[in-house]
Image (cartoon, rainbow, N blue to C red; front, top):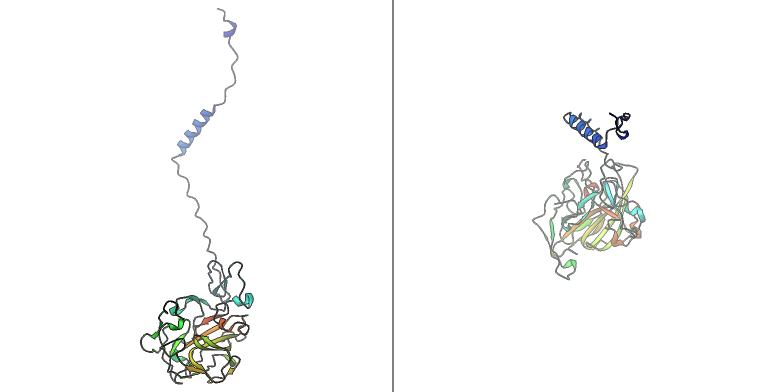
Length: 313
């Protein structure tokens, strides 16, 4: 039988490549076949030691918050954007070694405070004070200042001591309150390591009638370094004879007499030490700015008070 031309046998074609559907099905089957095989454990991550904390010049950690920079063991606040620098320029912001944040006693305001150095005695009995018997320390007060009434001046608030005088200050932060009798003589001190005489740099109203003396002190830990400290004598009844800004005092000279100015109802001596920041020149400032944080920093009195005879480090 004859086959029509349209049905004649044709030569065989080359094998066709699998379609995309076939290739996808094959890949899926391969994945399923391998699904039961466990992947090898990934290698443990390399242990990277944490970055060391920023450290100050003295080797103490200086971890600072926003808008502060580390210097020594403390954090120096940066001025607000666009704000002018304090008098003394950028040097007035440099922070003394050892300063750290602390609380300002009953006022509850945060500020820097230079703590007692470890080698200095902790007990008040080891030190000399501007008032009190030569062979024994004075008594110390815990003072509570009641807030003044609305619209009243700060001096209108009542002041009272909580309990009797005690042998140790309740706190050394931000100064101490020493029990005194009205008119009791307040003597100038020669601070530990002091060179030359003390200089009166302020007489006026600060903590009541206040006399501030400046002292040049050679650091025991660094004999090549001389720092300036202020000693503030507050709530005086009156300054001593000839005690005016610029006067120079030897140890034992009369600074003033104890009273209750700015402290109505409570006779006491408020004693505070402050370290003058490097580069700050208090002679060129408004005298009432000597307690500004950009100019001076509160210091534990035990770092600078002279040791009582027989006391040892």
